[in-house]
Image 1 (cartoon, rainbow, N blue to C red):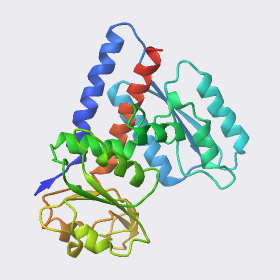
Image 2 (cartoon, rainbow, N blue to C red):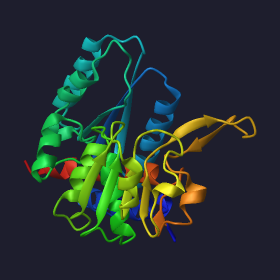
Image 3 (cartoon, rainbow, N blue to C red):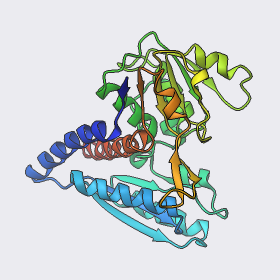
Length: 293
């Protein structure tokens, strides 16, 4: 059984990006620039953004963090995005989700210049992904594809079951795995909360991508021997015996499923690290694409 270690795969991706940015600087060009906007002080969001900023520094990408109060009006956030859109020195824009209730996430997503949409959430990016055109891929699915590539996981002709249909992970993941790509060409079944025969479908799967946000939902009896398991879930579960009072759980019951899988991602230390790698790749691509205009 192979542990699909995100530390190993992300380190390889980051080293490649670091070398590319070093070449840009050596040739007299500026570094790629990612601007992140954080609204409020949500603990998880703070952690995610801090990690993104740290990883940018490690690979030579410039980052700017813009903080706005939790009670900020939607118009102010949209004005902030408009300013970043107009700034020629900014290549990628990331607005950390979720946002406070007074702000429409969809309006914010659509306000970002598609050429700077490094999260890959803009409808224009999603449309191009469906049509197989070059575009920004949402960071988590992109990171998963990079992980499959790094560990040389065969996908062609395989049956993949994706559990979860969010626009951030499930839907784009199903499109990528079914596309004519080196790590695509799967027959994909996209499942969700209304799928009646989920266990039966999972038992047919060569690859399972669990992205539904329910701790340890995928059990051993749902997995056939030799399946590849990609666990996207990351949920804090209260645990009085843990030092921090909680433990991080994935969507897969790792201890029991690992014995049946041919490859599996750990949580933490798996897909989460690859999500940041995907974001960094998108930021570098945004810089390269805009320099070519």
